[in-house]
Length: 252
Image (cartoon, rainbow, N blue to C red; front, side, top):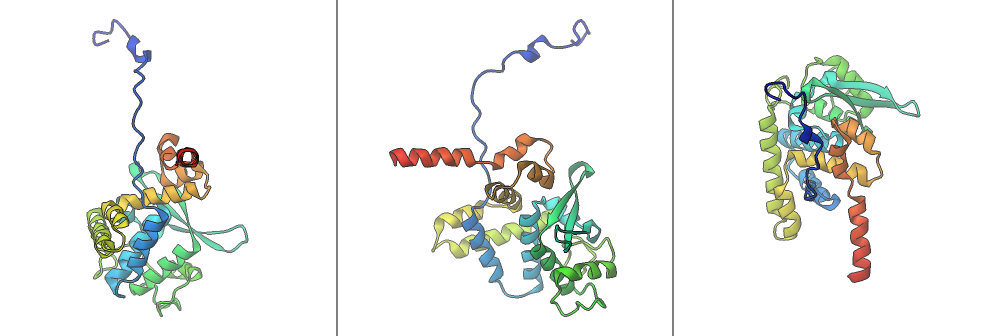
Protein backbone atom coordinates (compact mmCIF):
# COMPACT_ATOMS: atom_id res chain seq x y z
CA UNK A 1 0.00 0.00 0.00
CA UNK A 2 2.85 2.38 0.79
CA UNK A 3 4.38 2.01 -2.71
CA UNK A 4 0.87 1.87 -4.31
CA UNK A 5 0.97 -1.77 -5.47
CA UNK A 6 -2.39 -2.08 -3.70
CA UNK A 7 -5.08 0.54 -3.35
CA UNK A 8 -6.55 -1.04 -0.20
CA UNK A 9 -5.69 -3.47 2.58
CA UNK A 10 -7.24 -6.92 1.94
CA UNK A 11 -7.22 -7.64 5.67
CA UNK A 12 -9.63 -4.77 6.42
CA UNK A 13 -12.63 -7.07 5.90
CA UNK A 14 -11.21 -9.99 7.90
CA UNK A 15 -13.04 -10.87 11.15
CA UNK A 16 -11.57 -9.04 14.11
CA UNK A 17 -12.10 -11.87 16.57
CA UNK A 18 -14.97 -12.84 18.82
CA UNK A 19 -13.77 -11.49 22.17
CA UNK A 20 -16.68 -9.70 23.79
CA UNK A 21 -16.13 -6.15 24.95
CA UNK A 22 -17.12 -5.28 28.51
CA UNK A 23 -20.33 -3.30 28.89
CA UNK A 24 -19.52 0.36 29.35
CA UNK A 25 -20.24 1.65 32.84
CA UNK A 26 -22.94 4.29 32.88
CA UNK A 27 -21.59 7.03 35.09
CA UNK A 28 -24.80 8.61 36.27
CA UNK A 29 -26.66 9.19 39.50
CA UNK A 30 -29.78 7.21 40.31
CA UNK A 31 -33.03 9.07 40.84
CA UNK A 32 -32.65 8.68 44.60
CA UNK A 33 -29.06 9.89 44.57
CA UNK A 34 -30.06 12.95 42.54
CA UNK A 35 -32.87 13.73 45.00
CA UNK A 36 -30.36 13.59 47.84
CA UNK A 37 -27.94 15.87 46.01
CA UNK A 38 -30.67 18.29 44.96
CA UNK A 39 -32.06 18.42 48.49
CA UNK A 40 -28.60 19.22 49.83
CA UNK A 41 -28.19 22.01 47.26
CA UNK A 42 -31.57 23.51 48.15
CA UNK A 43 -30.62 23.47 51.84
CA UNK A 44 -27.52 25.64 51.40
CA UNK A 45 -27.51 29.22 52.76
CA UNK A 46 -29.15 31.72 50.39
CA UNK A 47 -26.12 33.49 48.90
CA UNK A 48 -25.07 34.60 45.42
CA UNK A 49 -22.63 31.69 45.17
CA UNK A 50 -25.35 29.23 46.21
CA UNK A 51 -27.77 30.62 43.62
CA UNK A 52 -25.14 30.22 40.91
CA UNK A 53 -24.29 26.68 42.02
CA UNK A 54 -27.96 25.68 41.99
CA UNK A 55 -28.28 27.13 38.47
CA UNK A 56 -25.25 25.14 37.30
CA UNK A 57 -26.72 21.83 38.40
CA UNK A 58 -30.22 22.71 37.13
CA UNK A 59 -28.93 23.60 33.64
CA UNK A 60 -26.55 20.64 33.49
CA UNK A 61 -29.26 18.12 34.39
CA UNK A 62 -32.08 19.66 32.32
CA UNK A 63 -30.06 20.16 29.13
CA UNK A 64 -27.24 17.61 29.30
CA UNK A 65 -24.71 20.30 28.40
CA UNK A 66 -20.98 19.68 28.84
CA UNK A 67 -18.86 21.93 31.10
CA UNK A 68 -17.51 23.87 28.10
CA UNK A 69 -21.05 24.39 26.80
CA UNK A 70 -22.25 25.58 30.20
CA UNK A 71 -19.36 28.05 30.27
CA UNK A 72 -20.06 29.28 26.73
CA UNK A 73 -23.84 29.59 27.12
CA UNK A 74 -25.04 33.13 26.38
CA UNK A 75 -28.35 34.95 26.45
CA UNK A 76 -28.30 34.84 22.64
CA UNK A 77 -28.61 31.04 22.81
CA UNK A 78 -32.17 31.36 24.17
CA UNK A 79 -34.91 31.28 21.53
CA UNK A 80 -38.58 31.83 22.25
CA UNK A 81 -41.06 29.30 20.90
CA UNK A 82 -44.62 28.17 21.62
CA UNK A 83 -45.84 24.79 22.82
CA UNK A 84 -48.74 22.74 21.43
CA UNK A 85 -51.22 24.88 23.41
CA UNK A 86 -49.77 28.13 22.10
CA UNK A 87 -48.17 29.00 25.44
CA UNK A 88 -44.69 30.57 25.54
CA UNK A 89 -41.85 28.03 25.47
CA UNK A 90 -38.08 28.26 25.25
CA UNK A 91 -35.29 26.43 23.46
CA UNK A 92 -31.55 26.67 23.92
CA UNK A 93 -29.42 26.75 20.76
CA UNK A 94 -26.32 25.04 22.14
CA UNK A 95 -23.03 25.50 20.31
CA UNK A 96 -21.23 22.23 20.94
CA UNK A 97 -18.17 20.36 19.72
CA UNK A 98 -16.91 21.48 16.34
CA UNK A 99 -19.11 24.60 16.58
CA UNK A 100 -22.12 22.43 15.74
CA UNK A 101 -25.46 23.82 16.89
CA UNK A 102 -28.25 21.79 18.41
CA UNK A 103 -31.63 22.86 19.70
CA UNK A 104 -32.47 21.73 23.24
CA UNK A 105 -35.95 22.39 24.66
CA UNK A 106 -36.08 24.03 28.09
CA UNK A 107 -38.78 23.05 30.54
CA UNK A 108 -40.98 25.83 31.92
CA UNK A 109 -39.51 25.24 35.39
CA UNK A 110 -35.92 25.68 34.18
CA UNK A 111 -36.87 28.75 32.14
CA UNK A 112 -38.42 30.26 35.26
CA UNK A 113 -35.33 29.37 37.30
CA UNK A 114 -33.13 31.01 34.69
CA UNK A 115 -35.26 34.17 34.70
CA UNK A 116 -34.98 34.36 38.47
CA UNK A 117 -31.23 33.80 38.28
CA UNK A 118 -30.70 36.64 35.80
CA UNK A 119 -32.81 39.00 37.91
CA UNK A 120 -30.93 37.94 41.04
CA UNK A 121 -27.71 39.02 39.33
CA UNK A 122 -29.20 42.49 38.79
CA UNK A 123 -29.94 42.03 35.10
CA UNK A 124 -33.16 42.95 33.32
CA UNK A 125 -33.79 46.15 35.26
CA UNK A 126 -36.78 48.14 34.03
CA UNK A 127 -38.64 45.05 32.85
CA UNK A 128 -40.96 44.87 35.83
CA UNK A 129 -39.13 41.78 37.09
CA UNK A 130 -36.56 43.44 39.29
CA UNK A 131 -38.01 42.07 42.52
CA UNK A 132 -36.23 38.73 42.25
CA UNK A 133 -39.48 36.90 41.43
CA UNK A 134 -39.06 36.57 37.67
CA UNK A 135 -41.40 34.09 36.01
CA UNK A 136 -40.90 32.06 32.84
CA UNK A 137 -43.08 34.53 30.90
CA UNK A 138 -40.73 37.37 31.97
CA UNK A 139 -37.69 35.77 30.37
CA UNK A 140 -38.40 37.42 27.01
CA UNK A 141 -38.54 40.89 28.59
CA UNK A 142 -35.32 40.24 30.47
CA UNK A 143 -33.52 39.13 27.31
CA UNK A 144 -34.65 42.26 25.46
CA UNK A 145 -33.10 44.40 28.20
CA UNK A 146 -29.68 42.74 28.39
CA UNK A 147 -26.69 42.28 26.11
CA UNK A 148 -27.13 39.11 23.97
CA UNK A 149 -23.57 38.13 24.91
CA UNK A 150 -24.44 38.01 28.63
CA UNK A 151 -23.20 34.65 29.96
CA UNK A 152 -25.81 32.52 31.71
CA UNK A 153 -23.16 31.55 34.28
CA UNK A 154 -20.77 34.32 35.25
CA UNK A 155 -18.41 35.75 37.81
CA UNK A 156 -20.10 36.85 41.03
CA UNK A 157 -18.54 40.30 40.71
CA UNK A 158 -19.03 40.84 36.99
CA UNK A 159 -22.16 39.42 35.28
CA UNK A 160 -20.52 39.95 31.88
CA UNK A 161 -17.47 37.81 32.67
CA UNK A 162 -18.11 34.21 31.77
CA UNK A 163 -16.85 31.35 33.90
CA UNK A 164 -14.11 29.06 32.64
CA UNK A 165 -15.03 25.38 32.14
CA UNK A 166 -12.36 24.43 34.71
CA UNK A 167 -13.97 26.73 37.28
CA UNK A 168 -17.40 25.18 36.69
CA UNK A 169 -15.87 21.74 37.14
CA UNK A 170 -14.09 22.84 40.31
CA UNK A 171 -17.22 24.28 41.95
CA UNK A 172 -19.52 21.39 41.00
CA UNK A 173 -16.95 18.80 42.07
CA UNK A 174 -16.48 20.55 45.42
CA UNK A 175 -20.25 20.56 45.88
CA UNK A 176 -20.70 16.82 45.31
CA UNK A 177 -17.85 16.09 47.71
CA UNK A 178 -19.39 18.29 50.40
CA UNK A 179 -22.77 16.66 49.84
CA UNK A 180 -21.19 13.20 50.14
CA UNK A 181 -19.51 14.21 53.40
CA UNK A 182 -22.88 15.31 54.78
CA UNK A 183 -24.49 11.99 53.78
CA UNK A 184 -21.67 9.68 54.84
CA UNK A 185 -23.06 8.67 58.24
CA UNK A 186 -26.67 8.25 57.07
CA UNK A 187 -26.21 6.65 53.66
CA UNK A 188 -22.61 5.62 52.92
CA UNK A 189 -23.50 3.89 49.65
CA UNK A 190 -25.20 6.96 48.19
CA UNK A 191 -22.42 9.15 49.58
CA UNK A 192 -19.78 7.05 47.82
CA UNK A 193 -21.57 7.28 44.48
CA UNK A 194 -22.21 11.01 44.77
CA UNK A 195 -18.57 11.61 45.69
CA UNK A 196 -17.47 9.79 42.53
CA UNK A 197 -19.67 11.98 40.34
CA UNK A 198 -18.58 14.97 38.30
CA UNK A 199 -20.29 17.62 36.14
CA UNK A 200 -20.23 15.21 33.19
CA UNK A 201 -22.26 12.76 35.26
CA UNK A 202 -25.13 15.27 35.08
CA UNK A 203 -25.07 14.79 31.31
CA UNK A 204 -25.24 11.01 31.75
CA UNK A 205 -27.95 11.37 34.39
CA UNK A 206 -29.94 13.46 31.92
CA UNK A 207 -29.66 10.70 29.32
CA UNK A 208 -30.51 7.90 31.73
CA UNK A 209 -33.58 9.68 33.13
CA UNK A 210 -34.81 10.51 29.63
CA UNK A 211 -34.57 6.94 28.34
CA UNK A 212 -35.98 5.35 31.50
CA UNK A 213 -38.97 7.69 31.31
CA UNK A 214 -39.73 6.32 27.84
CA UNK A 215 -38.13 9.13 25.86
CA UNK A 216 -37.21 8.55 22.24
CA UNK A 217 -33.53 7.78 21.74
CA UNK A 218 -33.47 9.74 18.50
CA UNK A 219 -34.61 12.86 20.33
CA UNK A 220 -32.04 12.26 23.04
CA UNK A 221 -29.32 11.94 20.42
CA UNK A 222 -30.30 15.35 19.02
CA UNK A 223 -30.49 16.93 22.47
CA UNK A 224 -27.04 15.67 23.47
CA UNK A 225 -25.43 16.26 20.08
CA UNK A 226 -24.18 12.69 19.64
CA UNK A 227 -22.66 11.80 16.29
CA UNK A 228 -23.97 8.23 16.30
CA UNK A 229 -26.82 6.15 17.70
CA UNK A 230 -24.27 3.84 19.33
CA UNK A 231 -23.21 6.58 21.74
CA UNK A 232 -26.80 7.28 22.76
CA UNK A 233 -27.51 3.57 23.17
CA UNK A 234 -25.43 3.39 26.36
CA UNK A 235 -28.30 5.04 28.25
CA UNK A 236 -30.78 2.30 27.39
CA UNK A 237 -30.37 -0.38 30.08
CA UNK A 238 -33.96 -1.61 29.88
CA UNK A 239 -33.02 -5.07 28.53
CA UNK A 240 -30.34 -5.55 31.19
CA UNK A 241 -32.79 -4.59 33.93
CA UNK A 242 -35.49 -6.86 32.52
CA UNK A 243 -33.11 -9.84 32.49
CA UNK A 244 -31.94 -9.08 36.02
CA UNK A 245 -35.56 -9.03 37.25
CA UNK A 246 -36.28 -12.36 35.57
CA UNK A 247 -33.18 -14.02 37.04
CA UNK A 248 -33.98 -12.61 40.47
CA UNK A 249 -37.52 -13.92 40.18
CA UNK A 250 -36.34 -17.47 39.47
CA UNK A 251 -33.17 -17.78 41.52
CA UNK A 252 -33.39 -14.98 44.09
